[in-house]
Length: 226
Length: 202
Image (cartoon, rainbow over all chains, first blue to last red):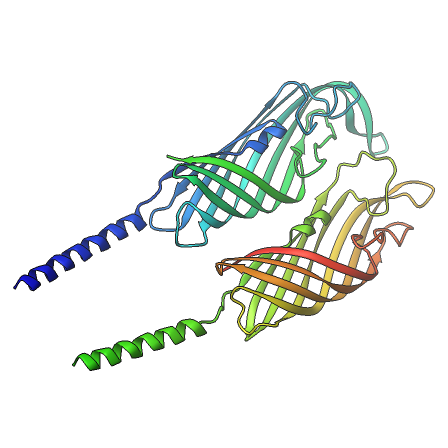
């Protein structure tokens, strides 16, 4: 009789343990917030919001961007020098954008740590104002398109769209602090427009505001679990 | 009765053990090749198991670049706009029967690339904007070592030899344009290959 009671107790204990394990696996981590420090090199701020999709290994990463600079200076010298004849010398730059990624952890062991695969896209808009010598395009009397230098106040608008795929490793430094290292590739296409027909495109490399082409992506994110 | 249970348990355990040992790695591996981005290309490889230690590796590529030229002197590989595509296909043979952790392999196969390039042709009396199309054919033999981490992430380093034959329809007088070294889009000749791939098993 005593043995039967013990057996029943063991079964009840086991069944509760099973419930507890299921709870632990299914409990969603909810929200993580990451900063992406390397964007400051190009006068940008990017804060990522990682939202977990319940019951899956998937996360949705929302990445708002904000760019601002009034000094035509940054760590990568994207604004050019302060020389009047430098066509990349601007008075003011503002920009904003939004990125969205679907991120999937490749191991089922953890929802917040390990290798992951992510893919998605982003849109950015830049408004660059200048007041100096720059190249402009005009149509001659013969119908051909020419370029000339002009000293004028100008606006340059850039719409930039991007699609990318990355692989990364998210590391849990402690239960609430995370580091995320990633690399991958992307494709970026920029459309330029200017009421004054300025031909400067800010297309000097992967990192430039108006870049068009394939691109290598690599970086670090630092974040917390809320 | 206890003996019957013991026999059933032993049978179950042995079958389970045997199955787990022979469990083959059948996932496809999707990799990207970062160094192609130096030449403005995206290459994504798909490694599919054919049988045993034989894999088929398909490597589609896409190229896109627009350059904002500041230089007044053009080099042989300089362009304003480039778009292109291509594919390599390799038969890959591992030295191990079942790739689960790592393995040495030999791969061989053909390659094809197409490029459309807008550039400044400065070979004549006047600089003119020209358009060229390039068809590039080739073949490679590779020796590589692939490592699988937790059967999830793949790292692959490889080296090898290849040859390229390029045919350019030039828009200007200079028909030897973009044929300056291994990285030239119009390169004809033999090449030494060296690369790295990072991928995931899905």
